[in-house]
Length: 162
Image (cartoon, rainbow, N blue to C red):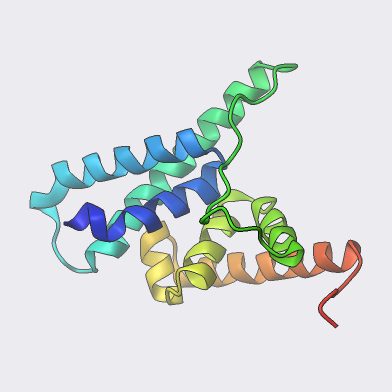
C-alpha cells in the first residue's frame, strides 16, 4: 500500500535528479527496498512520504554522482538511455517543454528542491526533511534555482506568454 501511494512521486523525484528513466526506476526500487528494511526503525517523527523522499533523494544523488563519474571515464560514448517524458502521450505546449528543459539543466540539489517544492507542493520544511538539508539551505537552493531559471528564460527570448 505504501509503495502504491508513493511510487509515482518517488519515481518522479528520482527521474528529475538522475535524468534517466532506467536509473530512476532503479533508484526508486532501491529506495523502497531500503525503506522496507528500515521500517521497524521508522520513528514516525515525519510522514512516511517525507521519509521515503529523503531516502530517494540520497540514493538519487549517489546514483547521479556515480553516473557522472562513469560518463567522465566513457568519453566519446553517447548515453544509452534518455529520460522518458512523463505524461499520457499527449503533446505538451512548447512553453512547458521549454521550462522542463530549463529545470532539467539545474544542478541536482536545486532540481530536487524545485521538484518537491513546486511540482509536488511540499513546504520548505518538508523539502528540508526529505533532502536532509537545513531549511535555509533549501531556501537558498530555491532562490538560486529561480534566478537561474529566470536568467535562462530571458536569455532565450523572454516571456512568450504575452
